[in-house]
Length: 258
Image (cartoon, rainbow, N blue to C red):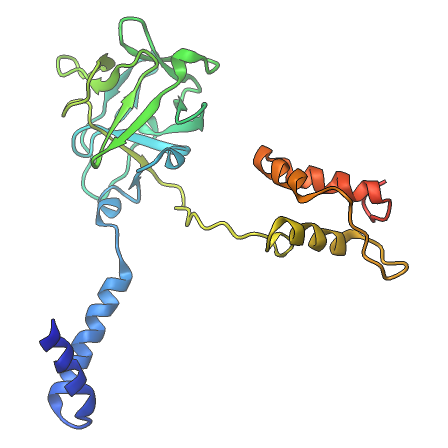
């Protein structure tokens, strides 16, 4: 690696000559290729990318078992594995489901027929429910680059090799239970940008909000006498904004508080 670095340094020093220019052009081409960062797996599946966490399992999704074959809904409320797709094609309409959050690390699935997917007591995956109950909740398991879907009966979803029906019958996850949950929604960056008023510690946040909403008739800033500990508790409980509003309303000097 030291020789490569030295070669680059020498190239910068030699202002004239063909070799440095050729290396420079090659270097730029390599960088440009890296910047593209194409998800080839996504392209091969028509723009449907591989979900890797529970937050990805929302909106339109498909469940791929095998290679380019997806779980497909039937009009009788049962499910099968669809015909293989060509490379570059995404799932068919009957192979697309709508996913909703259903508790901690769980989701519910609605088929194109408007019914929620559940599991019968004998382990058959069925889609005949109009509401989400305990039997209609599923849990994705992401581990070591593999994905499996756990039913409410603690058995993993798979495809029955005898009749291609979709079942949830195994207590453990193996090759038959491994699947890929795919989504075509816009990928989130995961970066949360706080409003200007919420930059800084909690004491500064309260001052920022008071400055934003308070009338300065006598040019004096009025803050509530309550301590910052109240704000810390409110932030943990998820009602920081409501607490700030209440504290401002007690000062009777706010444009939006009585």
